[in-house]
Length: 232
Image 1 (cartoon, rainbow, N blue to C red):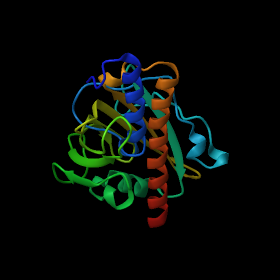
Image 2 (image 1 turned 90 degrees about the vertical axis):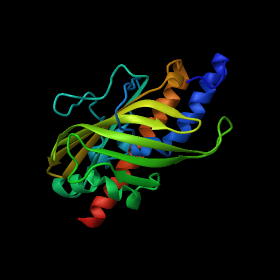
Image 3 (image 1 turned 120 degrees about the vertical axis):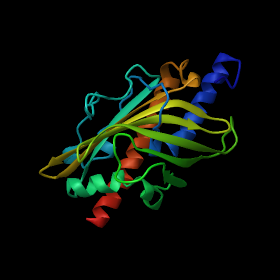
Image 4 (image 1 turned 90 degrees about the horizontal axis):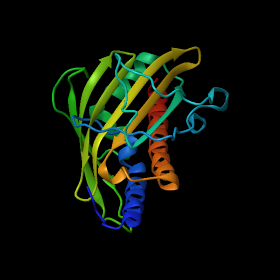
């Protein structure tokens, strides 16, 4: 996807679009059935998510049933948070995707494309707003997420495209893992993005976009923590 022909301006466009995504799409994470992921050297710090005593750098490269994000993709990030609630409860809140719009501001609508508990072949579609920027009008992304792997109470991996009028992430892959600890439930998440507009990013531009992805993941985890602890 090429929006501008001049390389530098294309790069600035990618940063602007990803910044908008950072407060919307990233917060919710992509997920569906296409092919592209994201890599970079940027890993979001867990210190913004976890209490100071538990603030250790998240360990990237985790998997669910042997599958993980695409480490060769344009942008990747990972983070985690400690939630003061039982693992089963945290799992139920996160995997009840039809209720996401009740506690995630970035989720406008969400619908399951099948029925029953979330499973390794489940699919769901949801929308998230992207605010207007200097490089693109306001947009709404439609994300079709396809679960690739799921181990109840332990992990889930989904992937898919995010498609809007001006912005498209060809493939986002999102991993979640849940671990019971003495202090509650440790939730780890990591995500990769693949899109043509992101491929040319280098240096500060690349770091800026990766930082927005990491920031969005932190926002999602903070909302999950608030909702799970409120209900527990």
